[in-house]
Length: 87
Image 1 (cartoon, rainbow, N blue to C red):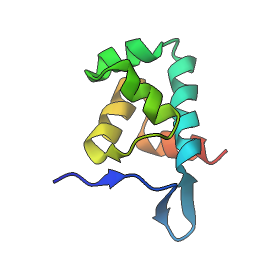
Image 2 (image 1 turned 45 degrees about the vertical axis):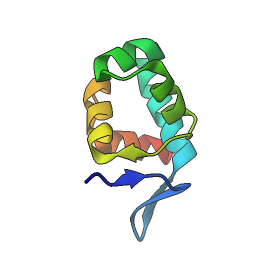
Image 3 (image 1 turned 180 degrees about the vertical axis):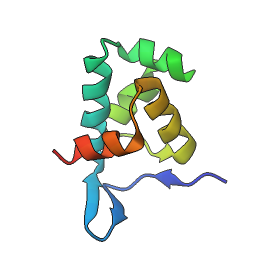
Image 4 (image 1 turned 30 degrees about the vertical axis):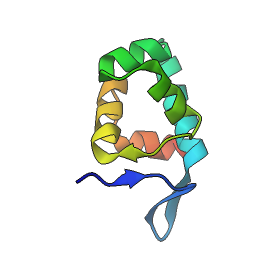
């Protein structure tokens, strides 16, 4: 069973939360910083580019497995993805 992040706000603890929209912007930032198109990132993750578009536009939930795969494909830690989303 996978748990999904499908809320407008992701609460990581009482003092640290990320708006889902901002998380999508963080994914977009790291993807572009690495010179990747949505299709290229999708290929690295073995998903279609529409999945990447939905993640970046906060139109889908993410399983923990997908989060780990996303961080691996972008070459960043989950902490970096979430921390950048808070900026």
